[in-house]
Structure formats: C-alpha cells, structure tokens
Image (tube, rainbow, N blue to C red; front, top):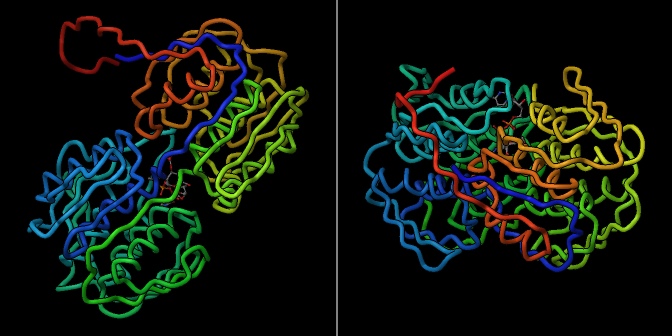
Length: 432
Ligand code: EPU
C-alpha cells in the first residue's frame, strides 16, 4: 500500500503545469476503436485510468505505440470482435464508452458493467440504455455483461435525456457518429470534454454540430479516418491546484489551462477572497488574506462542477463564517466529511447539503481517501493542517492526478509518497 504523508502549513509558490483532461482522454481512447487507421493522441495524462483503458484496448487487439510520454498512436484495425468483458473493466467508470464505440463500429457490443468511483450512491446507466434503444439496439444485462445488439447498425434517432448526463451524452455521440442517418440529442451535457470528443471525432471525419450546447446533431458517416488530436487541459486538475493555493496560501501560476473552462471555479474563489488573474493560457492564483465564507451548489457545466465540490468544501472548513454547499449532481458525495471531522473541521451534512462552520485551522490526522476527488480534497486538507497527515487509499488519487506529489513538492509543499508493505492476511479474501 502507498500512503501520502504531508507536513502541513507551507504556503505554495511557483508554477505548475496542468496535464491533459482525464475525462476527455477516457472518452477519446474508446473513440479510437471506431477509426480506420492510426490515431495519434497527444497530451494524454499519465494516470492509471488511462493506462487501464489502454490495456483493455490492447487486449481487444489494438496496436498501441508510445511515441513519447504524452503521445500515443492507436491502430484498432485488428480489433475483430465487439467484446470487452475483462475483470479490469470494473476498475473504471469510463469502460462504458466501449458500448457506444463498439455499437458504432460493429452494430453490437458485449461489455462488462462499468466500475469506477463509488461516492456512496448508485450510478445508473438507464439514460445510455434509453438512447441506444431509441437508436434500434436491444439492450440487456446478463451476468454482469451489458449486451447491446442491433440487426446491422445503429439508426439515427431523437434522444431526449431525462437528466443531464455527461456519460450518456458521450456514449450516444460515439454510437451516432457511425450510425445510419442523423441523431439529435436533446438536454445534452455541455462539459468541455464533450466538446473535445466532438472535435476529436470531427477531425477524424465525423459530422457533429452543437457540442457545448444542450442540443447536439450527429449526422452518421460511413467511416472515420486516422489523424492527430491533442487533448484539452484538465479543468478539474487545474481547479484542484487553485483550491490548494486558496487553502494553503501563497501564489502559483497554473499553466497550460483554458481560463474560460475555469470561470465557474475562479469566480467562487474570488468570492472567498482569493485573487485569480486570467492570462492567455494560464491563471495566477494568490491568497494572502483570511478566507471568506461562501455558498455554492454543484450543477452540470457551466455550473460549479461536482468534481470540485470536495476540494472547495475542504477549503471552506478554514474560511471565516458559515458556508452552505449543496450537491446538485450526485445523491451522496459527502462521505469524505467523516475524514475531515478527524482533522477538526465542523461540518453537518443533511441529505445533499453540507453546513460548514469555519474553524481557525485543521490538525493533521491519519485519514483515508474513498474516491478520486475526495482523495484530492484530503490532500488539500493535509496541506492546510497543522502537523502531520497520513493519507491511505491514494490509488484513487492516482487514477486521475498525474504526479500530484511531485507537482506539489515543486510548489514547496512537504509531501511524500511512502510504500508500506501490507500486513499478511490469513486468507486472500475481503473481510467485512
Ligand atoms: N444519471 C442517471 N442515469 C444515467 C446516467 C446518469 O440518472 O443513465 C444521473 C447520475 O446518477 C447523476 C447525474 O445523472 O446523478 C450525472 O451523471 P453523469 O452521467 O453526468 O456522470 P458520469 O458520466 O457517470 C462523469 C464523470 C464524473 C463526473 C460526472 C458529472 C467521467 C468518466 N466521469 O460521470 O467524474 O462527476 O460526469 O460531471 O467522465 C471524476 O472525474 O471524479 C468523476 C466522478
């Protein structure tokens, strides 16, 4: 087991470079399955979700060549069967994008049910199923395998989502790119990575209009051709470092970002008394004065992102006054609060709302990450706290953050990753 050990209290100074967006990469890699020829994908983040997905594609028969540490070539012409039923599919949520990609390419898909972060509630895929069904697929789940079958190809259709879903929007867009006729997605999600996937597919020959709005039109084409594509910077990784500076204090230039994607985060931080200056492809974040309380509700883009909720809530633990944070996307995304309580925070959670009474400081404690963004939030808590914090469960963090320990150390944080051998178990099974 690996743990992070943080000695808190150091303000952060310097520059940090943001990696490619995880949630764009995990959509674009499956999309490569639909391309005839070689896809060169640049600015790939070096995180475990990406390597898991690449190894799944490899097992399916894809040729993957590493060009340099951020660039790969993928050639899926030797993938022959629409089947991805490996155990490791359970490790990542985005494995469900293989359904759309395989349906698009082969007209059928057999894909293991996705896993991924579990914040405590259910993560349904009914909207994905509704969309594929409208497009002529018959979808069922048997023995943990999603089976989606058409007579020959998906057919274009109008798909109206009952909830705004990033995953369902992406999955239908994938299938529709090679479907017969046109597909209209209504009440689509508008996140930057949806636009990035549309740009990727269009650069390979797809015909997609309206990505970034809530109405997307996809005219199916006969084939997609190989090409080059560079993934956008990670909005949430950038936001996480912005929150870290807000919490720990200091001044950091956050480089290789699209400031427009960060507006929802920057404006909240400004309300909290943090200075955020937008430059062309970087933002400067500076915090010298005490933090002010604020209220926020997470919403689909361009609202405040749910994937930044744990990090900002953590910073609000040391802001003056009472803040109210409402989770508007997921049913249960406050499990990490128990860990912050061990560090002296004062938070009361009722259903989807957390009432945070600011305290003057947090104190270091042994704590455990239960999911990716909660893990990032606990790192921020450790940076702000007095004394030593030891974080378990860091494999969650490494699913989505490239070299977080190195990046924070370069900014002056006292953080290290240590390997602790697991205690011997009597039996090799999960207990409890
Ligand atoms: N929902 C349904 N039915 C569906 C799909 C979603 O009811 O068929 C509901 C969900 O229960 C949730 C809401 O719709 O309440 C939004 O879910 P969405 O489908 O948008 O989430 P997702 O696609 O499974 C992606 C990100 C998450 C991020 C959410 C919301 C990926 C791989 N994951 O998940 O990112 O929280 O969108 O923005 O893109 C993360 O990066 O840490 C992460 C969890």
